[in-house]
Image 1 (tube, rainbow, N blue to C red):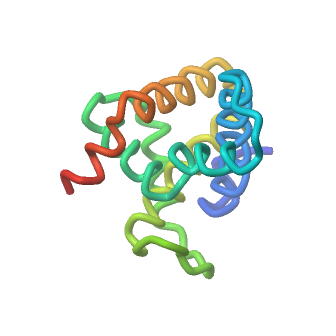
Image 2 (cartoon, helix red, strand yellow; image 1 turned 135 degrees about the horizontal axis):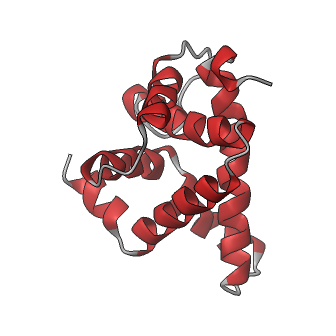
Amino acid sequence: MNPVLLNGIDLAYLGDAVYEVFVREHLLNKGITKPSLLQRTAKEYVSAKAQSALIYLMADDDFLTEAEWTMFKRGRNAKSYTKAKNTDATTYRRSTGFEAVFGYLKLEQQTQRIDELANWCIAQVEAGRTREQQTNK
């Protein structure tokens, strides 16, 4: 399947699952096993607000390639017929772009880059950088 031929929503659909599984494995590896705590903790990594903040940090740190930025923009600019829950439309669109990057990388079979990107994201969340970013807007 050629990711360049898919729309941003399709890429985000896949990317959401890719990133979510990575985060869930990370949390289990940290020893978190209570379902309610897992769910609450995962939100810090996978919420639209966290993903939107991560995109700002990626821009600040010049972390994405040109192709990845192109896929981010495709996801961010895609026409979505679903409404954002618990966030504004702009944040939701940026998080869709974030997920589109992971979907693109999965379809390109860039496993090493997915690992690098997901681990970087997790490190930013755990360092509190996403919370700082959300309050600085």
